[in-house]
Image (cartoon, rainbow, N blue to C red; front, side, top):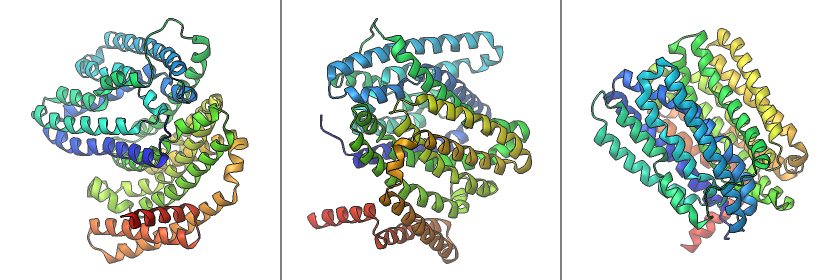
Length: 486
């Protein structure tokens, strides 16, 4: 099959992530004014509640399928056999998730208020399973996924304005949200036939598949615990006001993190395929490009967000959330550690079948993070929560890096990689200076943000080129070629 461009895939997946982030930014300000406070509360609780069962249904199948399936993508017959076995296991886990969900609705009377919303949200479970998006990831078919996502997001926004018009229309809001998230997965199931013949099978090789799948699932569960524990503990120790302030920091932090992670996601199937086929030299070349490219993007993005934190909070949340600025500045450092930790886990350890190490490292981090929250929140409130997140991400990055050091050492310790990191740090100093100048030069908040970003990109690029950064020079050469061709 034709090899897809990683740069094009990164752009398409980044565009899809932007759309997924823009959708709630458009819809939430509208629904928060139309719906009652109780309706919004029912929506949020039901969505979070179903999320736990969605995790059970997923069972770590998607991550495992991408890792193992990438080896067979040049052989439709072998991939069809593998995909059908994994899909059958996923169907069983989906049935178990629904049984547990229905039992919980029967047993816990306090959930009866949310039954209709939970049942509508639960459609995500079956649609996610039949959507088999992991097949498209294996084949790096991000163009289809992105186009489909754009179409369904636009339709969903129109449906929202048509059906959500009164204070008690929260069930319509639930339905539209489900449609926007997974409604297109039926098309996925029909379209997947061009890649493989997917069907339910009796011979699933449970013993072969189940152990790594459950290990990946346990890691996902541990991640969910330590990602969600900060807000939960903050609410228990402090109050709703502290949670509200912290939530703004987290939303902005996750926005930046998800955009950068989108660039990383597209490389996972390629790396899994190369490692699975034992093309180790080519694998290290691609891994080196990933590390070098992300080091040039993550550092300036994080420094820029730290410098512009106050203006960003004012634009996104308003002046009543200004107390979240310091919390945002602290938690932004976690972006750097989390991205590199993700490279070590998803791009190295999982393709190398060291998922037990990922599980061990994640559990250790989850425990440490919970303990840090109980220590730091009483002292620093939401700033302490941000600090505990930074320390947890730093710890898991170190643990994952140590666990795959034998593989990544030749890549990280290369002269080119170290030179890239050094030039990026020098470039970040230029960004700090530009942002300080713009802070005094513009009264307009939007003017400061736009001016700081444009001038920072220019000065950062100029510093990289002056330091003979190879990636920056290659990018400049490509721009010149396209300009001359036109």
